[in-house]
Image 1 (tube, rainbow, N blue to C red):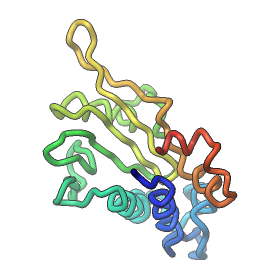
Image 2: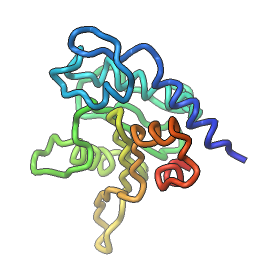
Image 3: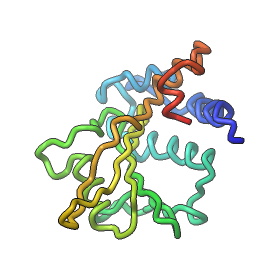
Image 4: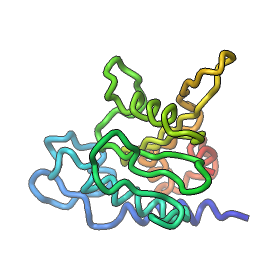
Amino acid sequence: MTNYKKILSNIIESFLKDRYRNAKNKKVSYKEYCNLKDKQKQYSGDEDIIVTPVLLDILRILGYESSINIIQQVEKKGDKPDFRTIKTNLFILDAKSTNMDISSKGKNLKTPFNQITRYLISLKGYEYGILFNLVKFEFFKRVYSEDGSIKVELMNDKTLNLLRLNELYENDELETSKEYETFK
């Protein structure tokens, strides 16, 4: 039986690492950092410096390791996801800066929502797309229309707000929460 509380505990423990700094180079907590505006952070575009290292910790805790069962894009050139599973084609995953909106489709083709849609349509066989911005995970699913075309849907019921889970964990309120049920 999977011990979800232990897995979540390990994830939350990774949030405690000494990696979050404000614009004055003062150490702040995970929660404080997530609530800062870009200009209040040491690095405004924190995808590579903060978000991706946290995501790598989470992936390791969940049993995914770069070059073993997941491919990590090292070069940031081209239109490719940051991570994708090897062999299973289960999911593609893209990290975004902390303050980036990862839920809204918008009209701009470069929104994370539209970007994950392009990945799921162009990369054959992947069923799920995941966006991560340090605060939450958003899950997307490839769906086939009756005419055979592919569309991508945001799985609203699967949104995983890590900031909220962290708060529930700290207050020992996990067991009865909707967020914890979604995590499991």
